[in-house]
Length: 63
Ligand code: SF4
Image 1 (cartoon, rainbow, N blue to C red):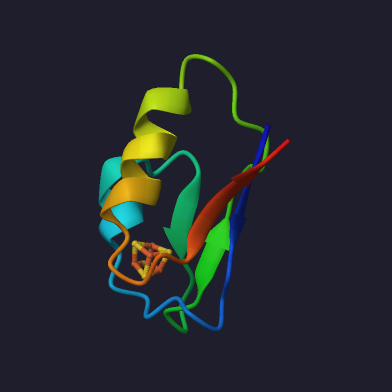
Image 2 (cartoon, rainbow, N blue to C red; image 1 turned 90 degrees about the vertical axis):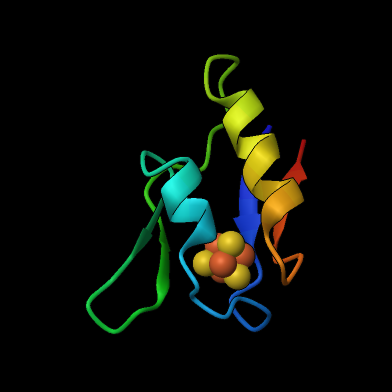
């Protein structure tokens, strides 16, 4: 499973970065950066939490 971010929808509020900084980061221009795409079992609960909490519904999971 992989994580995707719709950068058009993302408003760079950093909520996902606060939940799981191993996966999401904001660059110097406040653009969202994906540090890794692969969702492994140990990070899956927090990635799903980020999906649920993103106010823009910009994060999705794909097989
Ligand atoms: S929580 Fe959603 S809107 Fe906020 S930075 Fe992450 S992807 Fe963007």
